[in-house]
Image 1 (cartoon, rainbow, N blue to C red):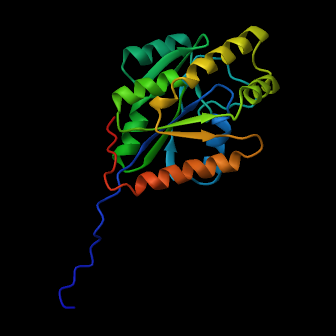
Image 2: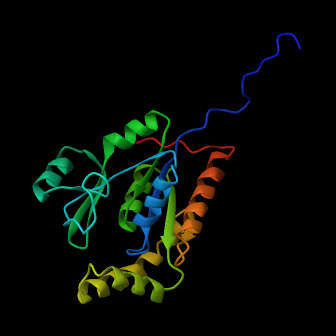
Image 3: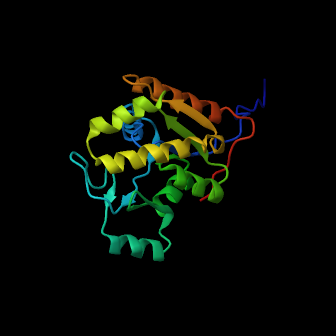
Length: 208
């Protein structure tokens, strides 16, 4: 038909701020690595931390490992979207890379503890919050023991904290179970969540 308008009837899809949180030892790093390997088209935020580097971790890839003094400078300069002290070490999300990625229309994934997720929910109410968990507490304890990065006292503290963090599930939008040996299913579930969010009639608008 003459004069036919071929422009899309759909509004522009808005970028999402996706918060991946959950219990310590549940496999958040493994899931993120899987998303990267699968070529997931998002900016995956790298947090700054004062904790020591674990074997195999790379600065700038797993975390930005900084001194307590440097971290304090970042806090005072309001360079962090969120920060907290977790198990005796400080963790924080550099704000500017997140802001720029969203501005450029790119989805952003941040990995953070439950305390930090609550802070981001207050600052960015439209963020998508995903809680990653194991099927049982026994499975979580087994994973923590296998990684051998905590003392017995630290392990006990993490398990006690996990029980409290489970009470915060209602704060989240989605729950994903990372079953033993089935990390690909957890990754697929997260992909499905993001796809569903992109199909919402009333899209979220994440402003940092």
